[in-house]
Length: 426
Image (cartoon, rainbow, N blue to C red; front, top):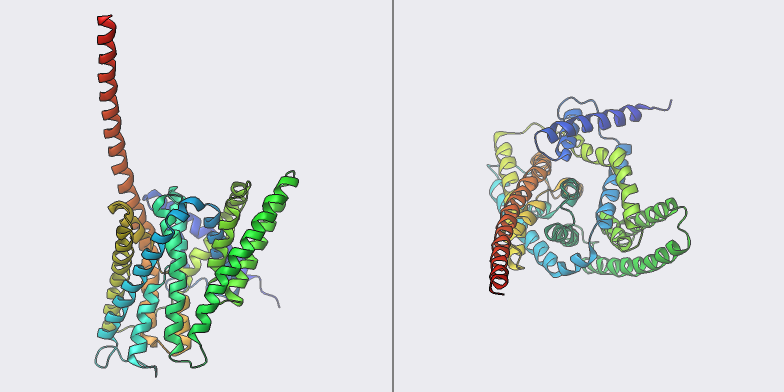
């Protein structure tokens, strides 16, 4: 008999994410935090009312694709070009520092007498893999928070988006290098070639679609709904090609698809329609699904200590690494802090990497629980701290504006008194 339980699951997710979103909003926190807490509450970690299913996983994947596609639509391409080199430097240092931090922490704990390993891979590869997990960045949480605050299309916001895309590629390379050492059938050079080919293919396909889309709009403007469908088809195709043909994350393909359409005349119309789709169904399921993944095994005191330190290292290494990269590229102290905080969240990307390591025998089962805790903690921390650092920016900017206005007022007084003296003389 066919089950319709998924309808109840969706209803509970939509209702709980909205209720918890309103509660967190009342406490001056982004609503995405409420959605994450709703998933934790409903999932196996607390009440156990909803379990992770293949259907929810697929809807969740579609949700993150639409979220990144929307981010691409709202990205200022000119500003992104200005931060291109900066994004690469930010991403590079933001990968190297967490890689070193995770490796060092794992070296201390993952040894006899501390946390016993139950996999056959060498301790060096196991420890290196923990570092690889920390290199991941799930920018979808940051994107939603920045959109909610109206800060997505800022200099810092564009740097975060650009760095996250490059971070994803560097993370894939690091993951490939480590896993290839356990599987002789994986050729590192082939994987690197696939990544280069994907970006060449994506740029070529994107330019062709851009010309087609722009020409089509000029002839068919009466029913603009068809533009939304065609744009969605292009997004899904590029996401599919990224994963299946080139081994690159589907969200990278979705983001590039959004970038290509962002320069067309109807980009705002398309973005508005996708915003509605994301708000009413896809985003709540995606954010709640992160909480649904939490199933913590029984953990010893040593494992709990490792989990706590892993969260601290995960936060500090991204803030320091990405913030240092931003500072080297002449971003202000405020912007450097905003960029570093915006890259903290590991989200579903780290979970995917952890599952991959678990499948190929690179991660002990006793370390999987701490990784899940780290993912959930960084995902919840990011939007809260992000709002705080942008609020600091707003207050400082307000003070600067007041000072500028005061100076302008003084200059006008001087000019006015000068004019008055001229009139008096005449």
